[in-house]
Image (cartoon, rainbow, N blue to C red):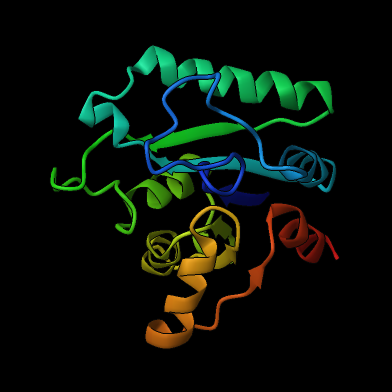
Length: 179
C-alpha cells in the first residue's frame, strides 16, 4: 500500500490564526484538491492528520468539524478525488495527550490502522510541529510554504538544519512525489 499523510490547515485549506471554525471558513488552497486527486490516481491512500484544538477551546463543535470534512469530501468527489481517512487531535496544547503533533501518537495510530511501516510514509505539513511529528514517528517529512510554511522553513534553515524537502504548495510536492 502506498500511503501518504497530509496536514489539513495550511496544506489542503487556507489557515487562520483565528481558527477555521465552520464549513464556510474552510476554503481550499488553489490546486490542493486536484493534487489529492492526482495522488489517488497514482495509487495512493490519502489520510489527513490534523491538530484541532479549536474543539478543546470551544471555538467549534464536532458537528462543525464534520461539516468541514464533508465539504472537503464533496469538493474532492466532484474532481475524482478522495481522502480515505481523517485523524484529528481534539485536545488543547496543555492537555498532555500523545496524539497532538509534534508527538507521534496520531501518525503511529495511522500506521497501525493501515498496517504499514511509517518509514516509507510521507507526511506533508506546513509547520515545525508537523516536521517534528514525522521525525518522531519515523516518517518522511515534507514541508510546504503555504500556511505557516514560510516561517517553518526559516526555522528549519536556522535551528533544525533538518534535511526536509520544501515545496511551494501541495501541488508542487505531489508533482515531485509522483515523478
